[in-house]
Image 1 (cartoon, rainbow, N blue to C red):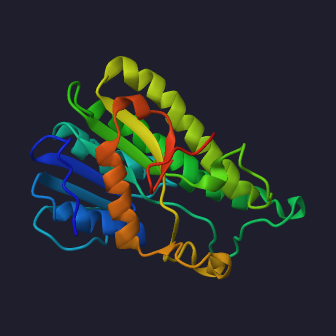
Image 2 (spheres, one colour):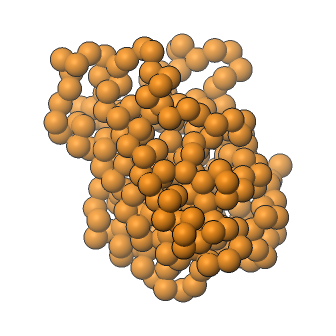
Length: 248
């Protein structure tokens, strides 16, 4: 079942970063089924995206500032953007794994995690927040994580990933202050999708409680329902798939 974003204007323009990933592709599928959505710019490193008449695939590399600007400048120049979702993220990769102890901290691994999870989304915000309309609801959302909460960190470990999401939450909060002055009807938020059956979570699913491992389509639909319900008063905060605020 698709979600209708009736709080956004008719023929709204959407940009999904990370459109080839599990959750990103699910966002694209849901939005392509929303009759109110006019066009979807589905960007990813590979350029792959679900098929659809509304969908405009493109390439973007969040580790390359020139790539970010090259991908987003034509979108920005074509008119207002009403919905931006940054669905990219990295937890592990070849030669990169979440730290279990401070002895595992590595400068190269930390730099890569921060580039994808923090700096990249920040540069996307810098490129597209000015493209949000001056009046009417518009939303910039970036996938964050509950483990980015400093006050909720009781287990330790995953130093780089936790730090990258905590830093992302601070970027969101800081941008929200300026956004409130320039686009009073718009909001910027972090969204926690839960544990989703994607490549990111694959090595860590063993400890997930029964019923708490979500399919991408379910998680994306829940988050779009959260986006639909949020008002500008929510700007600068982080919410989970149930619409509950996550403590900083």
